[in-house]
Amino acid sequence: MNLPWSETPYNDVIKRHTTGKLTFAIMRHDGFVKVHPPIERALSIVSERLLQAGHEVIFRHLAMKLLRTLQYQMSHHGKSNTDPKI
Image (cartoon, rainbow, N blue to C red; front, side, top):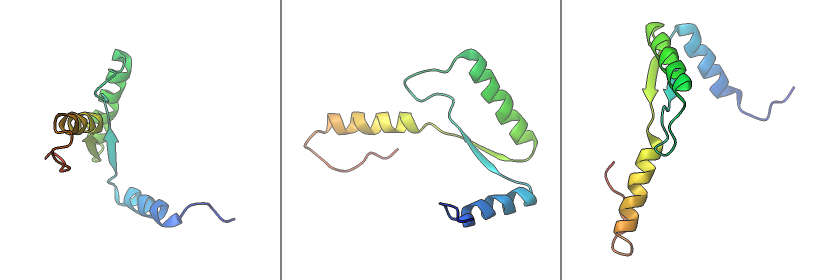
């Protein structure tokens, strides 16, 4: 059966899983809308358990970086095309 994706990334994940350590990214807040308290608690529990199991957890704040970039671009409208150092 032909699959519409490459099996290489899948095999890489499976290989990492058998060696023990996976990496997870968790975004608790997108910079605009805060999650409900039960969801925030669930994310905390999951991240704690993943860390206890020896996995890596990365907390992402991508929306905040995007917001800062947009604010920078709006404040420098027409003055510069360079990105801020985030």
